[in-house]
Length: 198
Image 1 (cartoon, one colour):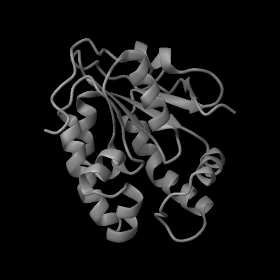
Image 2 (cartoon, helix red, strand yellow; image 1 turned 120 degrees about the horizontal axis):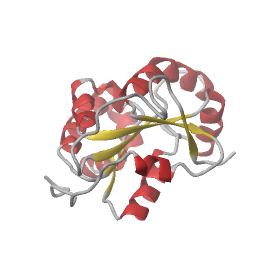
Image 3 (tube, rainbow, N blue to C red; image 1 turned 30 degrees about the vertical axis):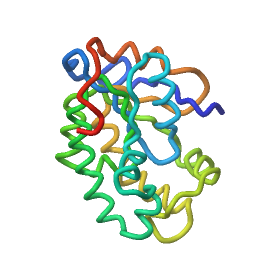
Image 4 (cartoon, rainbow, N blue to C red; image 1 turned 90 degrees about the vertical axis):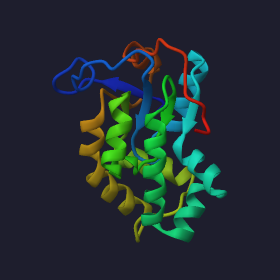
């Protein structure tokens, strides 16, 4: 199986939930579970289009002076989510960027909704089994007690409906290159902005 997901149809649209297109220059926001390939796909989309790329977990770590996993281990999930909500509000003001969110960004309620309001949102969907397999290749700070398999199944059951509700386009794990399908749905036509360190 390829690490790049495929586009699949969802009810109400030929490839995602129907929603009016936002203004030209909007962001492209990638959502999904840990290990779903948001950063890898986001970097490739940015490379092909020349758009600026921001990974919100990496940006959070840069601002905090330590990586996201260390922050989760030392400060706990509640503190991490509070910082993440601030970053979601910051990212909502960007234009023309490719944005890879953290797996739990969808829990950010109003802050996450603000980001999605000015974006084309793509959900990278994988089966629990695929996420478990991919997660074993790059261990992360745990969010739940128990095994990785238990964590993935628990988190996916809590978040899948939120990802689906936010998405303009759902991409399913499998063979193929979804980039042309994604770009056909992203009306980025104006220069990027504002400055990264706003």
